[in-house]
Each structure stands twice: as C-alpha cells, then as structure tokens.
Image (cartoon, protein in one colour):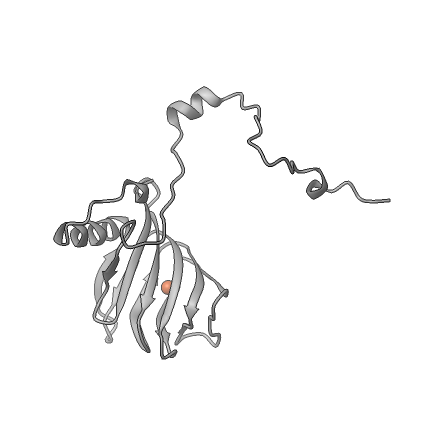
Length: 179
Ligand SMILES: [Fe+2]
C-alpha cells in the first residue's frame, strides 16, 4: 500500500491556486514584498573589495542587519581575518575556498555555516579564485595581521559600499536590493 505522503498530495496544477489566507488584509498592510535580482551588472554591479576581490550585493535588510551577496576573490589570495557577531550561510559557486583555521576545502555546491564568535581567515588556493554566495547576519569585525581591530562591516557598511560605487559610476540604485 502506497504511503500517503505530503509529496503525493501537493498541487501539480500548472496554474496559480487560490489559497485561503484569513490575514490577507494585515499582510497587505504590513508585509514586505519579495525581491528578485537578475544576473547582470545592470541589476547589481561587481564592486571592488580590496585589490583582488569584488562583491555583488544582492539584499540589504536594515531591520535585522542581514545582507547577502556574492564574494568573488579573483585569484589565489586571502580575505582578512575576521570575527563574526552573527550567523553566516554560504554556498561555494565556483573555484574553491577554505579557512586557515579548519581542515576542509569548499568546492562548488559545498555548504558553509558560520556561527557567532568564530574567528577565521578566508583563503583561496584555486588559480581562478572563488565565488561564494553568502547570506550574512550581524556585524563582522576585521583585524590586521597583528590582531589589531580595523573596522566593523554591517548592513550600513554594505549599503554604503554599493551606493558609493553606483554614484561614482552613474549606475541607478536597484530598489530590489532593499528589503
Ligand atoms: Fe567568516
């Protein structure tokens, strides 16, 4: 006898289904629309991050201090030692990356979860570097090679990074990036 699983009972109709929602007026009044960012630099440009890397910003949420982006380290190199005050979820898209502090290497498709309090140094040994999608929550503190504090990067820093570059290059700000 076949099990009556949820998967067997999902709608397979290739059409929009009307779903009951008793609080639709409240959601209409207070909810926030979802967002979509396409793949081109018109939707979001690569913004230089140091001499050997760039960030393609994808979302900023000032209410929860969360932000997401693709970090591109363009060749074998290092992104400085940093400390997390929040949670980070990353997926390796291209190339490879690892942390000096751990024994694993992230390759395309690999999943990375980082938690508050972690301190580590991101490197890529791949000749083509790495592209990492990241969903980041909370501040990230960066340090120099003597352990001296340099700067805190949070949602305000990331918005400023994106907007400053767009203004300098005459690129209109994309409202889809702002939750
Ligand atoms: Fe990290």
